Image (cartoon, rainbow over all chains, first blue to last red; front, side, top):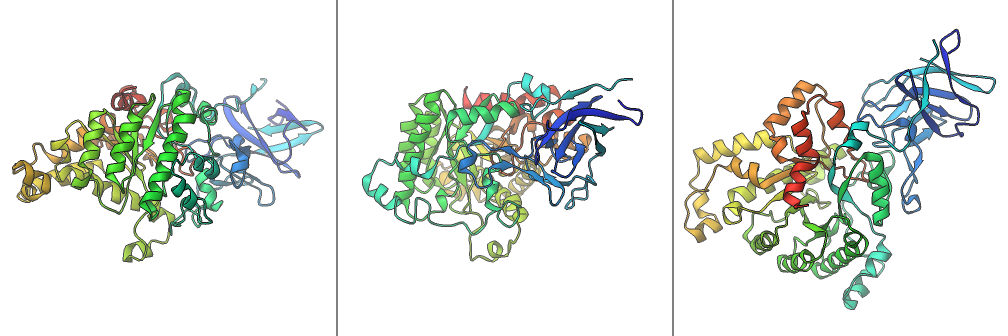
Length: 120
Length: 377
């Protein structure tokens, strides 16, 4: 942990562009997403049924026989991630789900050299 | 102080405790590719017609999820598409399901209009499931045609002899309800073969060009409430027409038809029946038997002959409310876990571990005990 409470979770290159990865920091689950321009950290658990958001964008089973190929996923342009189970769409900056008004936690996330840091 | 950081296990999507328990999933959909399914059609004449440009299920359902879900019709495959047993195993590993009870999931079949062609699809689906699932050691429910009770009997008898066929799968829908006496041979054959009847929601939905059907504009109304209404009508119809006096050992499972209506049915059926029971004697089965009344209170049949799949669960957030509702709904006796994989209303077993509403007994009965009992697995 750094002096300003940032914790290193990964290094640049560990999280491919357009994808996310899940971490547990002191017992708190977070998902870190790489939109290409930035990294975002958000609670890893959807408030609906506690689906792990880090799995958003995973390839479906027999993806070639489905239409979209992925379970939910990151929308870099809208800066949202949709849940892999029921497609609830979460704003990565505010943690808000617009339709229900519910919010989940978001966390400051920054890159320092090669390190990706999250502040809990 | 140094923070502890660990990368999460990508293969575990539900709480750790779920992997320690035994979980039976009574509604896991397989989706064969159309071309492969059709290779199993035995009758050449039927096959010829099923492979025209119309395909095997030409009648489109008016109602679908396309306007309600961002990915449109993709809602049918939100999690993927299981074609073979290894696909099902892969999906189950992440959500801690130990025993999926698979079905061919052709839920728009009874919406189609041609009974002979529908029977051919039914036969093909069952043979596909035998080859790729039952013979691979996976428990399977055999699809039976509601539109043709004679053929349903034939299919039950044919499939019941096969290993790992544990239930018959059909639909509740806005058509002839299952209390009708035409289904007696089906019930008799199911009881003889000790198979429960699984009744899943049907894509027939509320009939098109009807006042109610045409004015349901949202998916919440259609899937959320059309199905439970037809499920309730089916349940009450079977009870009040004396199906279970004639077939007391018949077990019926409602899939995706809701479950929180159990208290409503329990108290309303009993009160109405006790106030005004005189019409029961003129229902056809009672006319035959000469009995005047039902042998038991209506709610007793609900409790003993029906089981309800849990998905979509819609569990109250407050554990106290949820616990009360579970008690009133006789959940430990009637509820059976279902995931509905791979659809957009998927329910992994997370609820059972994150809500304090479940004691150990109720959790065990819902997640495996009730299913094991009626499936005899």
